Each structure stands twice: as C-alpha cells, then as structure tokens.
Length: 420
Ligand SMILES: [Mg+2]
Image (tube, rainbow, N blue to C red; front, side):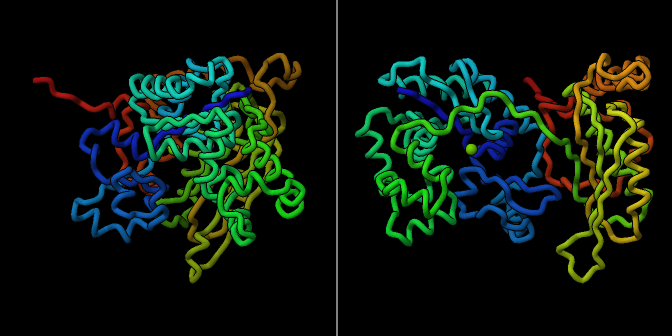
C-alpha cells in the first residue's frame, strides 16, 4: 500500500510572528497584505476573536488601538526562511517530498509500517517543533487526497491523524464535508450539494462516469484517490520557473517619472539578483505600469512593453538600461499605483554557451563584478552596495508600518536580549 503524509504549518505567518516575538504569544495577531491593506493570516487567538480573512485594516482600527489585536505587516523574506526550515526538517523523515506550498509538504512514507503511522507522525511533529519552533499538523493516508482529508481531522485533535485501513478511511470520509475535499473547490462542491452529495463519503461512492460527465476528469481522479488509489503522484522535482517577476504597489500614488525610474531600478536590481541566484540569464524583459483600478474616479492608464535583449544576460546594468528605456516609451503623466519588471526566456548561465563574440556577460570582469556585488549584499545586507538610480528617500516605497524586525534575514534587526 502506498502511504503519504502531509505536514502543514499551523497559522504559519502569524505563528512565525509569534515565534520570533515572545510578546505576541497568546495574543490575537493578524498579518497584513502588501501596503497593510487586508488581513491575510490570523493567529489562533485572532480566529477565536472572529476576525475574518481579507478584512481591511481600517475596519480593525478600534481593536488595534484598544490593544486587543496586534497587526503586523507581512514579512515575506522571514516566512521564506521558515518555509525552508520546515522543508529541511521534513526531509529527514522521507526519501522523497513535494513542496506543495510555503507551509505544506507532502512526504512519501512508503518506508514505514502503516501500523506505526500515527507514532511516526507524532515524531515528525515533535522534531519539527524542536528544530524550528514551527507548529505543524500532520495527515497520513494512502493517497495525497486522503492525507489532506486526514489533516482536517488532525487539526481538531492531537495534531496528527493517520488513516490506513478501509474502516478508518470510511469513518473519516463520513464526517468530512464535501467542500473540505482537497481539490474540489467551492463551485464543484456547491453543485454536488445541490445533487444531494454532502459528504466526502457520498462523493467517493458516486458513479465515476457521472462525476466525469458533470465535473471533470480531474474530479474523477480525486474520487479515485478518496477510494485509496493514488492518482496524483508526488511532484518531487521543483518545476523550473518560467518567469521572475518583481512588482509592487506603491505606498502612495506616484506621478513623477524620476520616482518611477527609481522604483523600477530598485525592482530590476532585485530581479537580476534572483536571476543570478538561479544561475540563469534572461533573453526577454517586460516592464509594466498601472494606475490604481480601484480609484475609479481617477484617470486610468496601464501599459506594458516587452524588450528582447541583444543576447541573454544576467548583467544588471544591461537589463537596467533596457528596462528604463522601456519605461520611457510607456510613461504618461498619471498617478501610478504600480510598476514592475518581468524577466523571461531563460538560458543557463554558462559562459561556454555564449558564443565567442556574444558571451552572456559582456566580459569575465563584469561577471566577476556581479558575483562580488551579490556576495557583499548577501553578507552585509541587500543595501550594502546598491545602484544610485534606486534612490535614497524612496517616497514611493510600499508601506509596511507594522513590520516586525526581519530577525532571520537582516543582521541589523536581530533582537537584542539582555541577560541579567
Ligand atoms: Mg497552514
């Protein structure tokens, strides 16, 4: 029998905030989207307060001001580090795993005796907590969909739940609502409810031809999985990215071309760093600008331009010049809300692949320069050395008024602890 486990970080973003700042523990904490717009994550306590996802921040102001609720700006670099740690911890317990999302990992568990699955799950949960501080829930079952079903039960019990026998599976599916079946989605599950199918068990027992005819082939595979037959294999190799995109909404509308150039330079430098970290070169770039579509009374304008580079490169000054040239052509004096850059058409950064007359970097010297810059920034912080064009005051920068110290990615923001 195949056996698959899924580990899921509990309240991952809010939990990370609580983990890194002891003052937040036991408190109602919400994490806000870019520019502190809406709630995108809640601690257990915030959920108990009845705070809903996507609530706009201004609606929470009374609670925040009263000290009942603590809001934090989302701090993605920190969550990314915690995500790496979660995956790294899980990798000790399985021969192969799939990083499903930033806080969810599927693990092959074929190497263990199904009768010990619960105990094994508890061991993983305990070890991840000890090594990283991350609290997780674990679901274990013969297929990915059953593992996801088991985790729903795990969250209501001891944090670990394994289904390995037909009786256990049947019992779980009888109590699982059809909208909680992984992969069905709200549209399909509400249609199923209209047809009188309200539980996962009823869905599993429905005729397959009927599912295929009215829903989809994928839904029929979901059904197979609920019956214990694997139809969604683990995706262990990370798909290579087709695009590197860096785009942000401004903290306030930006009309001046100088400020747009600054912001675009800043994001381009960041995109190039990412590109080099993956040892690749880009052959195509595109620049986009947009006003705020929600401010309907203001004049609207959005545009983008795609530029093919003379040859694929990862040399920031070349890409920067092309990006700024593109901006010049699509710029109009509007109150802009966003600017961004996308890098595409990647080739491996291999000096041997460029031709003698058109290597990927203009010269070995310039390649060395980029590597040195990246190394310095990695060691001393992203802003240790930067392009003049990225500006100083940066009035356009995204808001992040409630951001926690970036204790995991910035030396200067490591908390100071006084030992008495
Ligand atoms: Mg989670």
